[in-house]
Image 1 (cartoon, rainbow, N blue to C red):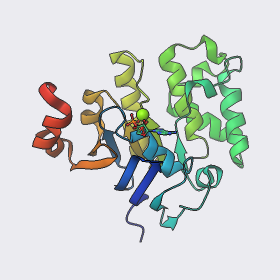
Image 2 (cartoon, rainbow, N blue to C red):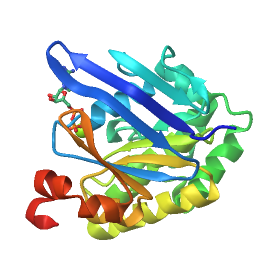
Image 3 (tube, rainbow, N blue to C red):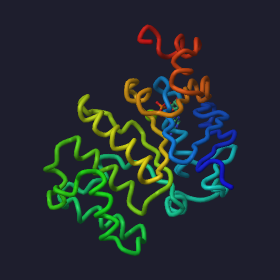
Length: 239
Ligand SMILES: Nc1ncnc2c1ncn2[C@@H]1O[C@H](COP(=O)(O)OP(=O)(O)O)[C@@H](O)[C@H]1O
Ligand SMILES: [Mg+2]
């Protein structure tokens, strides 16, 4: 039986002398949201690159749905159910919403890209905007379109790097609600890198704290909030 949908063991990425990520063990259980926080430069984005295959591992292992995928490239891992949110720039500004989600689904090799795109857009409350060209969407809707593109083909694991950046409080809460619902109804598991502490502590089942490429704390939101090292190193007076 597969215990975790995603697991990293002793994952390291070094850039010359810079140990961006240095021996990280992470797990993600089915349907779980794991928040990943830490100061700028802690290695959060690099660990996502390591998991997706965008960066070669200096050492360690990445296991997806029970399979060691460490030697596989980005496309092969995506085909096996590992997805990440696209940057805003990957939206085609001039193309209607439905058309680009269906195109992404088709490129993924979905057997019925129309049905796949429809399901994703309905789930994210974008169906009514399916004919709108992306550049005419509000910013919050554009971020939901990023998420929609990441969800085609029904991935098992979603890696999100600061998806709330630039959103208003209301838009952030809305996106957080969609993420929570996805984990419940789509069986998607999420690794969420996010600056907004209210969002992270509010929706994560477990939280990991990074500092200088290493995990300094890992536990429930309450445990992590109460951890003296975390309070000192990261949360500071805000805690
Ligand atoms: N391509 C790169 N070459 C050299 N150093 C890098 C590269 N990318 C990131 N780093 C360094 O790795 C560390 C971790 O960066 P990053 O993963 O972006 O942190 P975070 O996402 O937590 O802000 C930083 O010290 C950063 O300067
Ligand atoms: Mg980053």
